Amino acid sequence: MVHVSDQAVSRLRLPIFPTPLNAGAGFKHEHLADILRDENGVGFFEVHAENFMGEGGAPHAALSKLREDYAIFLHGVGMSIGGETALDREHLKRFKLVVDRYEPMVISEHLAWSTHDTTFYNDLLPIPYTKPVLDRVISHVHQFQNELGRKMLLENPSTYVAFEQCDMSETDFLREIVKQTGCALLLDINNVYVSATNHNYSPAQYLADFPLTHVKEIHLAGHATEEDETGAPLLIDAHDREVSDAVWSIYEDVIERIGPVPTLIEWDNDVPPWTVLKDEANKADVILARHTRHTSMLKAS
Amino acid sequence: MGDTAEFAAGLLNPRHPVPLLVKGQIERRYAVYRNNVTVGLIRALEANFPTVRRLLGEQYFQGFARDHAQTHPPHSPLMFQYGAEFPQALENAVDLASYPYLGDIARLEILWRESYHAADANPLAADALASIAPDKLFDCRLTAHPAMRLIPSRFAIHSIFAANRQGGEGQVADLIQSQCVLVTRPHYDVAVHAITPDQFEFFLALQDGLSFGDALDRAATIEPSFDLSGTLSLLLQSGAFQSIQQGNEQTS
Image (tube, rainbow over all chains, first blue to last red; front, side, top):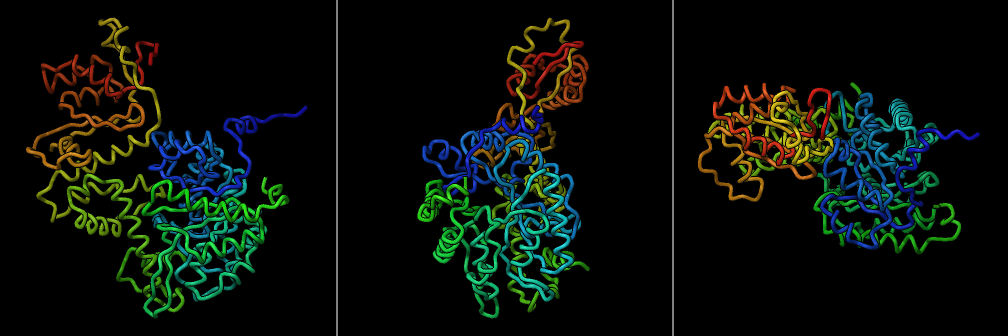
């Protein structure tokens, strides 16, 4: 006799969607009315987990409504997985509550830190790629996955500085985390382009070394262009404008190689009207459709 | 020192040198993180204290928020809770001594946000008290709605808040006039109600679990001619309470 656990029953509480073949958008509360009126919509919505860690009210009402019609991807921005400081147990519990409440299709966090000691810096800060740092990140990914009872996606960072001591490349660092924790990867192509430009290497070479078979989601966003005091280009991961042509071109190369992958447009600052954000998602749809082959469709669903 | 300890040391201190572990010690590059951290915290304070921001003006608020972020950074990843020490900082600021109401405005904005994010619950029905015999009413106790908050003030915080936050004119005639505020969120919209000091005592006593009769006594010590019927009508219409208990029964 098959025993159906309470957990399995509760999983049926919310609608189950197939893996979206159309691009998604980062959810902004000010777009809610337009989204609900929009008959075509987008492939899915992604939300920052921390914004839904209050107990109730309008944020939860909005997300509950959205969850009726869309797959939700849950993206953490405050877990500080890269940090020296132990993961915050209260924050892990809060994250689990959001997961239980919305049954997201995907859960992701960053290869970065934001808390040191007891101070939360509210930014995605960089780590040196060394063996001791690798060990602590692996231990944090294990802890996060164990707490949530499911696998996570880890996102490659955008960085503005390099470190004096570094034993391995970012791609080898990520590969080792995947190997030891079983997590998958969230490939942020804007981050690839920003970091490659800032550290003067080729995005193509980085992607040639990247464990692409483990990529389960792609992020696209806009960046700002500045210079450092040596006159070298300094790109900032600003999420405040359209995706650049260079990033679209790299995106198409990646999709051509690995087939369609759920793709998200992030636009968090100077948020445009819903139609502008949706147009960006539709640009990704065109590229996804161009490379949708029968086999990849089977794989994706 | 570990890598994040060393990297963190200069994030909120612009005079701290670029950490040695940063390759090439490039100031402008480390400054991106300094800027991201500081601007991110200023934006969080702007989002949490829009009325204070309007009262101080954009430029002054930015400078004050920057100092506050550097001296009182958050200790939780929940940015909508950031700023617990902001009211006291406004009151302690020598330059702001002629605006003594700012602290209570900031406290009201914290309560507004707590109310906005509080758990959902249905408020008491409009006729919840109608079915209770008058002689039984005085023994009844109420359970506060999770989004209900109360704040007393020596200043006209309701008038100032309403004039500056809810699209008002920004001008308040008499700032030094004691006002108490009841914050409620019966469904998804937060409402702020000006209440008198005796009403404040009455709601506070009920929130603390005192019976109607005891709450009435408390209010009467402040104002012997306490307006019970007007207060009960506000109690029901505002959605401040979610259930009523008479003996062992419960009605919602």
